[in-house]
Length: 300
Image 1 (cartoon, rainbow, N blue to C red):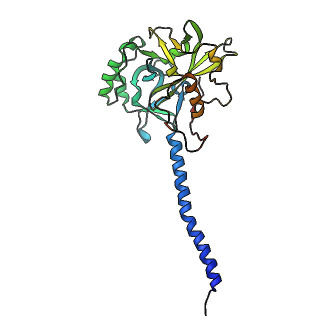
Image 2: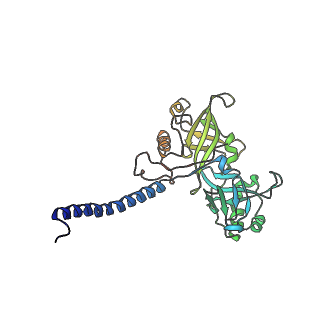
Image 3: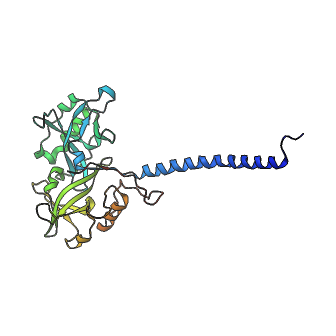
């Protein structure tokens, strides 16, 4: 006697077929999700603001209990010709900000960790103390002493900069931004892409009285030019837009303005007519509107 009728066999076969057919689809969905996640990570651009960079802790990069604080970042040195961060000025041994020793270390020797919000530097405290003490008056010749000392400590040397092109970012806050003879405003905050060591954007404050009613423009460093001589107490930056033209420029007060979002940055690049920096993704995320960029820090 047949256990199942022909009709029952057809029903069971159909159900099994549907179930088995669903298995590859589940795998495809998982693969699609992984591909989407990979695409998001590929488009991830992290920008560090001044408030995160200056004062950030630098440790010796070791694991577990052996990790120790070397100091904190007191200032940055950039090459004004291309906006590349060449050195970080590391302050060590300070107590409540007093009595510290400052040393310049090559930027590409530092590694930023998002989770701990700290930098690591593969060097011992003893070797750090043997490196030359930082002297802001010696900026034009900074590279020679730093590179030589860091090679002894197995720390990567910085890229060679052009003589006289180094500027302390602490002076960017007082930098005058001009268009020809017309004063546009002054440098305010800035954003740096840590992996490439690129100065990404300068926030230019314009108009207003004592900070009230001013506009904060997001300007790509590529749209600025340092007016020589460089390295003086007052830094001047030339911008290729008049104050009238800047009325239509992207501002932090604009709706949806967020420098960590690819769409907003693309708008900024387009307005100033500059090519996207090398740290920007070459293509767009697989899903329109997808953006995983993270804003780090709250400025100054």
